[in-house]
Length: 452
Ligand code: NDP
Image (cartoon, rainbow, N blue to C red; front, side, top):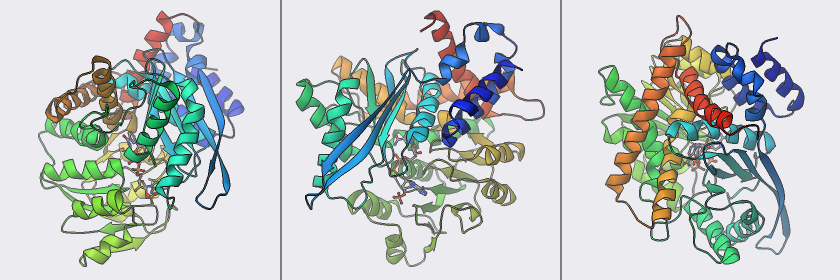
């Protein structure tokens, strides 16, 4: 049995109850066949066995009291996956679906993503099955304080630096940071995504969405094309989706659709982002509101099942899944190819299933996997860490220029790895490119550091 097959067999046995983790790790392992099966160094060093196993996984109780005085208990997680190239770094997700499998897949992906940025950051991720939707500010604050009352002992500016993710934005980062500072009695860069004026970096909120557009822009530039005149469909209407839409529009494209977990809007003449920002950031409302305000927009209820009405049914040149994992299925991939979509960029982590990804690549779509395409967020988090350490603040223009340079660098490394290791007949397989380029960096550091 080949080295890769041995590892796949082992994780299928050990982690049978963790479907998301198996999905993410198998995708990476399949990409690594080309190098790991032909070079015995990795097997001798037990490298894949070590890489696949998190260095540490912390699970904890999060008790808090709701506005009616009722005691609530949630389950918190932090996975400290790999510290070969720097302190653990990765966001915190608050969503009812959070469990060990989801946190592990996110931490595993994060390890490669952070390596691709070229910044010294290891991989980590955290979260809780808490749902901030419908909670008062007071409830969210008490919950965040309780979450940090356990998490503080595991993190630190040189150990593990969490950030936001689904359900964790500026408000939640603020509450968690406040509690950390209160317990530790020190003001350090232990979280990123902080508010401007108390250690946050300009451009962090926009970074993931902008970075996604920058990497695609780099590719379009290479093939003598651009965003101008393109129709773009985006799923989600949160942080990543909104800023991806903003940059895509600034470059001359029309964003015709956005969604939330209940449905999607189709606005042929182009989405009005001010309305979306008001609905999402200010009033914390649902997208149904959008069609009440813009009478020429159509709202369609949708569920997450393939075969039902889907945001991916809308014809587009570029599709950007920016909501959550496993939101773009094979049926959606077929529809996109049939409708002439040429580019898919994953703003979210693992939004496309394995078969959908394969179908898109084989159908000639330029497919940008999340670990490369959404690395802009963690890149600017890395820049926030640098600013905190040096006690300096850079301007938006400085941060944006650095983000562009990083995304260009990521494009170049996944492009050259895809050329070097691409499967015959398939051009520009950026999935293989990203997995191999990220792996090589982490593997080198792990080999250098001995068996730990
Ligand atoms: P937000 O919480 O700001 O927004 C998430 C959006 O996705 C919301 O519109 C939400 O709709 C929608 N959504 C969530 N779950 C589902 C679901 N099951 N079905 C359909 N829609 C859903 O999160 P972010 O924008 O920060 O994150 C989005 C994705 O991007 C995640 O995969 C995250 O891991 C990834 N990412 C985020 C980074 C960041 O910097 N924030 C960095 C890199 C990756 P609703 O309001 O109805 O729940």
